Image (tube, rainbow, N blue to C red; front, side, top):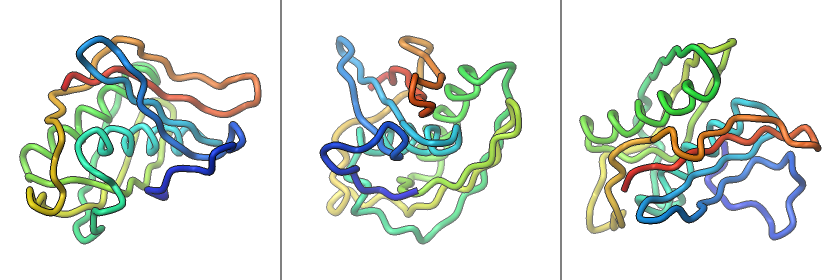
Length: 151
């Protein structure tokens, strides 16, 4: 998945991410033609809350697996697995290759150890929440995956 923001007027199926306001926290939302693209873009929005994804080198792959009872819980588990890996490994990730089979997710997150001077982290994401949690297809068929993250 690309770490670039889509053009000003993308189609609904263009993979992209965005933040949305939510009181003291921050919403992350991913769009994609596939469920995997939407989850990858939501992960990129999570990274973008911390630092500019374009400045991350994709030097280190980290394997992540999640399984949940439904797609919504899978999104929260996925984002929380990334938060955990970022904290434990002291890394930031800028690329996400995913395979979702039902409610099981296998992914490779690629990134590098965080360098405070270069990455200039803005906030620490504490975790994904069930607030504003939605995973669905819109009227055009695009997948949307969103939730609020605690910062």
